[in-house]
Length: 97
Picture: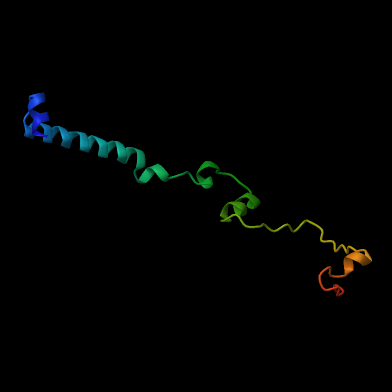
């Protein structure tokens, strides 16, 4: 390192100050890029002022699970199998409902 100092014509104190300046500049840039406010997003309430009840209930829901479908009809459908399909291929026993 001393050889590098002498080749550039600088003393150790000048190089230490330069390194400190560059480190502080790097810290500032990283703070701007990755600081606390970089991950903040606007909430849906901030972007929409007047909404009806259905939209406000939808906004309060969290997660990605299934949603209630109250308007869908529920039908039971029975599928009848052929006689060959009603027996177990391994043991030959009959299948029950």
